[in-house]
Image 1 (cartoon, rainbow, N blue to C red):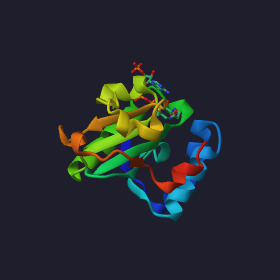
Image 2: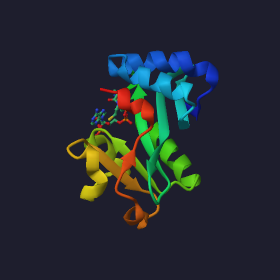
Image 3: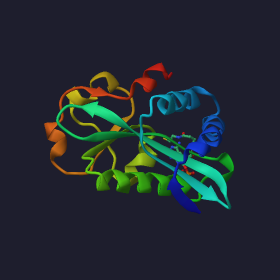
Image 4: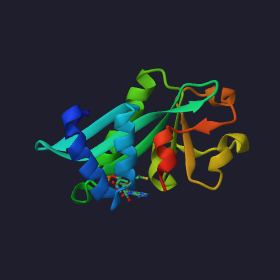
Length: 163
Ligand SMILES: CC(C)(COP(=O)(O)OP(=O)(O)OC[C@H]1O[C@@H](n2cnc3c(N)ncnc32)[C@H](O)[C@@H]1OP(=O)(O)O)[C@@H](O)C(=O)NCCC(=O)NCCS
């Protein structure tokens, strides 16, 4: 398995994979919008024998006081699951984020998957804000910095259409 940065010519394949993996077009629409506004900060695909079987995108997330990113979407082709591909994509994304000086990574997703990477539910009521009750989790890449974060999180605009 190879994990490599996504290329422009991968985009149609990636959109089709996302639609298949999530069993619907909502996430693919969000990613198409993110491509249009060029908001993908970190993006990798996983390839097996030249076929794209997994995809990770990380976008910028606005929160005052710290440099933060958001994970999502992350997906793996249904026939390629449970082989460590999703984990490898996420780990590569987190390593890249850390290397770029990112201080915290947020995600809305299944805690049982993200917990193994060190994500925890946000404990700050003010940070949870709008996302209270959602599965908002955070991974501090630079310990202690989260305390400096302002009260509001804003995901990339494309996510507003989601749901
Ligand atoms: C979630 C997803 C990316 C995981 O990819 P993957 O390559 O199968 O994951 P890995 O092989 O690295 O890890 C497998 C582990 O994750 C767990 N896992 C997979 N999907 C999960 C989910 N939706 N919620 C919780 N745990 C999940 C598996 O049970 C397995 O656990 P184990 O190691 O204890 O047996 C993939 O299942 C997928 O594309 N799902 C549909 C899209 C989606 O829901 N994405 C959002 C993720 S919250």
